[in-house]
Structures are given as structure tokens and as C-alpha cells.
Amino acid sequence: MSYAFSGKTALITGAGGGISGACAELFYRYGANLVLTDRDFLAVAATAKRLDPEGNRVVALPHDVSSSQQAELVVELATKTFGCIDFLIPGAGLYLEQALSEMTDAEWSQLIRVNLDGVFYTVRESRPLLREGGAIVTIASMAGHKGSLKHSHYAAAKGGVLTLTRTLAIELAPHIRVNAVSPGLIQTPMVSSLIAAHGPQLIEQTPLKRFGSSMDVVQAVAFLCSDAASFITAETLHVNGGLYIAS
Image (cartoon, rainbow, N blue to C red):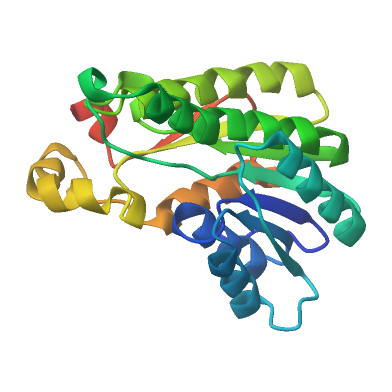
């Protein structure tokens, strides 16, 4: 499936790698202009350079999504460069393991700031720039639906993303559609330690008997941004090979 995104602009956070990086590659292939951000500026700048060596359609910015002030600067640059935003994918995330009994205030706060506050700041600042008929797709997680052992901060933040997504869909309708994608176990660096420790067991629990790829997720994101999903809002699309229902 391919979509015609020429003349459209996508703002993607966390685009230095993983799911957001794959999203940048796919949307560029479909013709979109891109504003890419990441806390790791060297990584996101390398992605931008690889996709668009001339810098005509892709700009990269350093961006700590937990800072509302930095969200303002990102939107400023997007305005100056492309004038508007059609697709917003606030994909920056942080996944750390810590048992509740050992979790510090700082650890709890860090995961909430990145995974939930970061989505809120990015959406709030971008909203005036979103063009009529645009789309927001948040990146939630299976953990936000059912919880996750030793990841209470991450699961709580992703649960917040799900309810924030539905609320935004109501507030921004009928002009902007807002949906979520909930990945399961996707082979990215963020969950490499979990896969290394429990890979065979997790594969056995997954009806489709494999881990997902970043492309599995971003194809779902592209669909939700496209005109093919023009009557879909406030929904969550699960991308987990059936693990959510089977485990």
C-alpha cells in the first residue's frame, strides 16, 4: 500500500531511530516534507541527511520532548520552513524497567514526562499549525491497555496517551482526526533487553509467532494519516501479532 503525501508536512518526534525513524523513512518515500526531532541530535541529523542530502524536504532539530519551551521552538521552525503541519506523530518514548518497590520519584517522573507530558506539549504547541483535514497519530503501547510487570511508570504514561488521544479526537473534531497505534513487541533497540531475556517465551505467546518490525507499525501510522482513514478518529489500532488478546 502506498499513499500520496506529496505537498504534505509531517512532524515526527523521536525520529533518531526505532519506530519514529522508520516512520520518517516511509513518509519521505510517500512524498511528505518532514520536520524530525530527537533528543539525540546527531542521530536525527544523520537520518535527515541520509533521506534528503540537499535538505529541501527534511529538517532536523534537537528536542527534549519533556520541555514545553523546546516544543515551542520546534513549531517555530516548522512554521518558518514549511508553513503548516498536516501529520503529527509524537513518537518520542522511553522504556525502562524498574520494580515499584524500588522506583524513585525521579524515575517515575522521568517516564511520565517523556511518554505523556511530551505528547501533550507537542500536540498543544502544534495544534495552531495543523492544517484542516490533518491527522495526529500517537504511539501508545500494549502496556497502556493491560499494564506491564516492572514498568508501572511506562504503562501508566501510555494509558494516559490512550485517554488523551480520545479526548483530543473530540476536541479537535471535525477539523483534525486523532488516533493511536498500540505496538506490542517490536524489534527496536528500546526493547532489545526484554527480547533477549524472554524472546522464545514471548514468541510462543504470540499467535503470529514472530516479533513485529518497525515497518509493521509505521504502515499502520501511514494508513491512519491517509485519506483511506478519513472517517476514522478516536480509535486505537493494535499492532502486536495477537499477543494482546492471547496473553
